Length: 69
Image 1 (tube, rainbow, N blue to C red):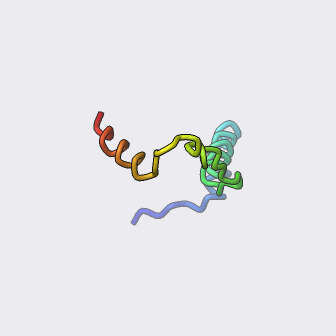
Image 2 (image 1 turned 135 degrees about the vertical axis):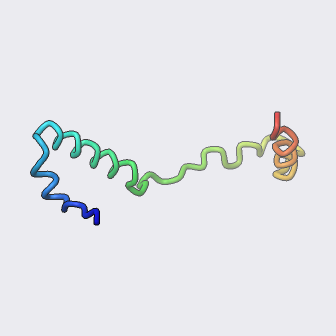
């Protein structure tokens, strides 16, 4: 049966330079998977207000027509 060692035991067996690599990678993973605290910005909202006669349906139709281009 293949048993894995507990993490603290593995850590103690690593030389210091590899412990640093493990620490760096763990910090990278924490940052990568941390929930975003930055609020969503909707700078585009209302951008087409000055365009007369352009509706959301028009934009959707145009996107769908050009999807494969």
